[in-house]
Length: 629
Ligand code: COA
Ligand code: AMP
Image 1 (spheres, rainbow, N blue to C red):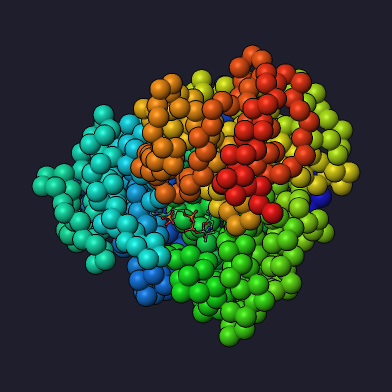
Image 2 (image 1 turned 180 degrees about the vertical axis):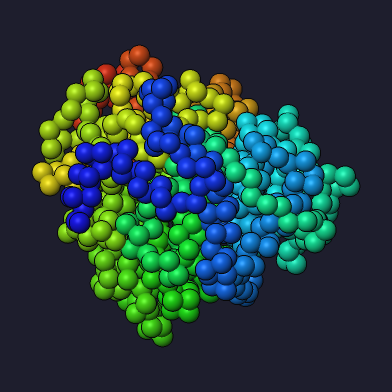
């Protein structure tokens, strides 16, 4: 069957389609049906099945592929390589689960995981799901304050962390950040387990912090605890419009069924082959394609602790691919832009035989045509863009190479995947014709594994995703479909920006800047950047009477965002301005500011209060080096 037949088979009978996909999962009790629609427009899948995530990702493979590598750890920043087989992984995960259980963690409890890219991060996630607890992984590049917000929302019983992470040129001590977060948060975890790394050992607080290795060595292995199909496997916080992140809930049953389905159909992987997603476990790509999907499907996954460039050079990806025999490789376009900038002619590829590599998959941000062309010319394999979100956990639109390689149209992530019926709507919810730009919405119900809701925030879930277009999920992306049914993703419709494939909220940054004592008003926009896709740029107006040097205040603003949100925000551009451009009703004209900073043409908004302000904005962005020539 080709793509069209598979998509039509899903459309004709979604229930049969997903029940068949569910057969590939080991259930403790098989679900009686796939979709549960009693609470529409809130939908759930496989609710009456009983199942365990860790069993399906680890234990079930031990009999047939116990000696196969489950995880290959490759860390150029610590000069370490290690392999963990499925049998070894089972033991490690079961013991860590036992250590958690012995300290009172049980089904439904939340456990925060704040870890660098080491195999223990995956072992932690798997150990938590093994005992029916719910993990929430927080990316290491977030600062204490962001971690504290997540601690207060998820209310974890335990936190699993490491003494440090390693960024090129500096060791990031995690423990002080963790201590700071726990101090800031109103909720306190019962205990933490800290993985000591030799690059920076952490001081442990008596009675609260325990040494990870000692706790595991003393623990009895814990068995898998079956949970209901709709039991949350994890919560992953992602940026929305405000500084309060959204806790995306991932349901156990649908997650297993859908991710397993994607490995063959979207990534063309057979069990036993090596899959590599060069991302971080702190992001959804890391959850789905470093940890869960490859393991559920019996593949080998790679945990890479390094960067595309500088660890030690722009050939590091090619070394990893050739050394570990990677068949399908997945990363963000920004990683390729970084390599291209360092090594435009691909000299660093020459020493390596990467004939094992069959596909390059890109996602996380718009894949710009230059990058796709460059990657394709260099690698001579299909370069596949695909579009998805933290909320969905896997591809909404893609090119399902395991079913059929569809003609690639550069700039489009190709076509809707089974489970997703994509519509382009105008502001009133009216369907737009092909070729016209509108809001991208997906007809409800969303398929298995996608978010059934937000953690403890049903109203916010309805308001953010379901209320604008009744009967649809509002993606927050704008774009169009063409006459061949290809989808084109053009922009976000909200305040979310995408910096080096990392999703960030300009609203959240504005909240931080507004808290500076000298700032009366501010705006943060996303400007185009050649490497990272977008960069945040802040504009602050000072409180009357403040006479301090502007560059001093700008520096404080940069420091504040780094402290409150984290280095990952990459917030380094700030201008102090007298006023912000606004409409007569007082709305800040952010879109117009973006056009000015990008040097793009724009129509003067009819509702603008005072067009003269735009000249000041133009001058300010000029001083920051924008628009880039
Ligand atoms: N812990 C602590 N700090 C971190 C961190 C982590 N896990 N990850 C990033 N940071 C820091 C970086 O050190 C950097 O700090 P600096 O301002 O002191 O230099 C800052 O956060 C910004 O990081 P980043 O945006 O990653 O920029 P970079 O210049 O270090 O690297 C790229 C640029 C393009 C090489 C890098 O972003 C990359 O590899 N991106 C791949 C994209 C990706 O994996 N996306 C995930 C979704 S698919
Ligand atoms: P995240 O939730 O971090 O995965 O970010 C999701 C957002 O990233 C989407 O809503 C898009 O705005 C953007 N995005 C992800 N993949 C693509 C893609 N292939 N093309 C264009 N934008 C993308």
